[in-house]
Amino acid sequence: MFTEKKTKSTLSKALALGMVATTVSLGAQTATADAANTENTDTNSIYRTKTLTTKTGTVTASSLYVRKGPGKTYSIVTTLSKGQTVTITETDSATGWHKIIMSNGQTGYVGPNYITVSNTTTNTGTNSGTTGGTTGGTTGSGTTTVASKTGTVTASSLNVRSGGSTAYSIVTTLSKGQTVTITGTASTGWYKITTSTGQTGYVSPSYISLSGTSSDNNTGSNSQTGVYVVHTYSTISKVGKVTTSSLNVRSGPSTSYGVKSSLLKGSVVGILKQYSNGWYEVKLANGTTGYVSGSYLTITSGTASDITSGTTSGSTSGGTVGSTGAVTSSKVQAVVNMVKAQVGKPYVYGAAGPNSFDCSGLTYYAYKNAAGISINRSSAAQASNGRYVSKSELQPGDLVFFNSGTNAIRHVGMYVGNGQFIHAPSPGKSVKYENLYSSYYVKGYVTARRIIG
Image (cartoon, rainbow, N blue to C red):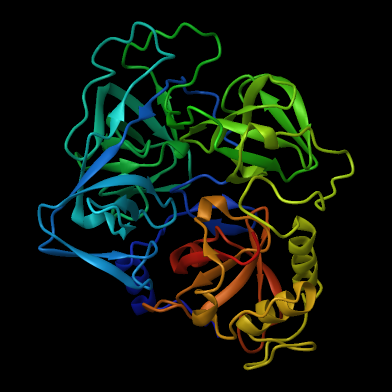
């Protein structure tokens, strides 16, 4: 059961867990303006490359738990002491938690508030002749200093946070049209800013339009400032499968660049670079390269041999992508079709179909009847089924879990693509579509699991 009533205590708990709370228009609903989930349409910024190197984290708490997944709901692997160092291999975009490797080779996840990050960035490539300190060194907190720039807020409301991700607490909120001074860039790509009242903090670059007070001398006619390379793959180890009927391939990482070609649904591309605005530089089946929005890709492990040109039919039954799955994607599609067929049926506590459902009964029913897979019956127990996937890597069929304003998982739904999930909400309501990026569900989001693949 997932109570949808918002209370002061519920909001406080959600904020204590580092959840997101700010607004930007998404149709008739309200969602956060901490991270973009659609194509970036900003045409006012100038592109500059920044490549991340290996990051080292030093424990600042007297004792720090290392957990199996990015959140307090996961079991404890081991405990670190103050002053111990670890290697940070990635950061979960939904929670801000770091995936780490310890000196003994063990891996796990730690919260960002008790780790000081160093050796986080090196700048490379596409800016020629930057001046005025725009490529200044990194600070102990993983923030690259830059010459001052002026930024204007483009969202209706934008959170300023105490660190460079949604895992950090909110310092203040800015309104559309307000200007800030940008003094640095965190390793996550977020801007370090000073407001007109003198407050400092960090904001997502997706909702800031830059105007030039620094001297960036860019050689290309198509360049954008504020969009950074967050990962470069020396060899193709990840591939992306196109999930929309037709996807434009552009000459740079945003919609402000010209279209070079298009990809059909089912095409598989090799991932060359990932950018801070969610775009990717990719290699196509014909050997050419270009840029596409990650909103329309399913990213998995794979190699160059997995790159294909796709089909015009839009069929999703073409087997697995890369090496991660042994079950065909047609089985996943059957599960998604099954849960979609239940929309409109009433919520009944303890029910698992076929005429009524509670939240975990709906997901249990879909996997059991469409794929022949028996998952656990309760929402908390289902969070141990399958494997963890980050929020940025969600694909249709994945289970998404929420906490109902508590410290425990209390609700589950099924992601069906395009930022939507289907769930059985609560008594008196029916199975329905919901926006995963609406403010209410962003605050309560905990984790996601992939059952097939």
